[in-house]
Image (cartoon, rainbow, N blue to C red; front, top):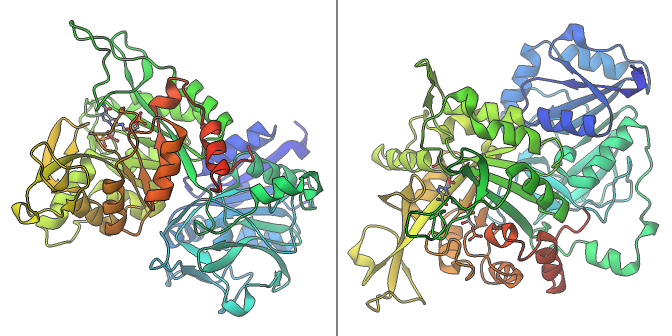
Length: 561
Ligand code: 1PR
């Protein structure tokens, strides 16, 4: 094997490792993992390439770096001129400190006591920043492009003080910036043999692949933007109407075994996934999960979500069917992948208890970026209120969030609308609705269900999502059983109620039937992303058509795929 085609990847248990390995392999590079100092290569100028990926909690990550004895070898490698690329928390580690974990010391290559990792202001925008943002500045490098979008998922960033927002260089580092709402932060930085990005290039589609390829092949110049027409520049540029983020479109695959035992993508009407027939009907088969995921990636889906909808049935851990699906999909889909269904403490066939964070870890190691929790999140929220608005530290939300970061924990909620005559009739948060009930009721609340809508619980969505946010969730996937599979558009009242309850991002789901429904959701609610399923699986519309519709209607969408 020629040494030029080898890249080393530092492995301190980071969640995005598998995705980075996949991108390097896709770019025809062999990958060698570094888990201990002896495996560190000797710096040999441009010939040695090391990638330093990080995700999740800064303190947890940096502590693991020190514990594994890799801090000194990294410093030595850099001092000797070896090429290294930091990703996300990998970039953050080059700063002196982070508000996230003040007790932990970073490598301190840039920023000193003035620029370090600070939490975004969540009173002005959703935090974490999750989605596709642009870059700006006057000092681009490594094929980075101001007209492309890159994927971010983080609550902390090297936020620049106001007087430095126009800077293109700091402490001898070239910097490229990103604006998220009212704050500007360092998105990428380059000095000599070290380059790093806050965004995830391994999840940034073609734009991210170009950047990693440039690093691996020493193409230090910026992308040549003269290839764009003025109209293309206009369409691709950022107008900051959505804090800087493109309108995010997610394709969702509900996966289960059919009666023949094959794993298929299905889609229900109000969660009933069987064909209508007198004898019960077969499970609807709308395709194979991996090939559909690939198809949606190519159509420009900004994320793909897989839900194992029969996860309440117990299954030996090693046979978890979605592990293989994730692992294959992650080989060619370079956008964020979420997996849900069965993220809970499980008892394996031999009686061993496997904790939810270990189950989640199996998925992350297979290529998932986020896990979504349904049923167990409802139990956790109920316990939270019983416990005087406190977590017990043991729920899947808490354990996964602590280990992998809040951004990796999505809560998938399956609510049903319940009508009441007056807000005083129930203890739950109600709304005055424009869609009156069967007996002309003017109020409703949204009741949480578990086990795919099979069981209703005594907790409303408003209270539920607040508990989940407090326990450490990073995003809400807001389904709606009444609207699911109806092709009649999203439930705006539900979305607006949920948005008013939390400051974490909310994904609108259930009811999309035509591109106009996505536009309406972005127009009439402040949802952070829209998810669609049936209309894509039935080939009625492509993801690309939805995005073109949005752009035509004046919304910014990621079109560079
Ligand atoms: O409870 O943590 O094991 O997770 C189970 C997961 O499976 C939950 O996320 C739950 O929402 C999901 N689920 C369970 N049963 C069903 C079902 O359909 N019978 N699917 C189900 C829920 C919701 C969306 C759906 C949209 C958009 N699916 O993902 O695809 O409603 O559809 P549309 O655009 O066609 O209207 P746990």
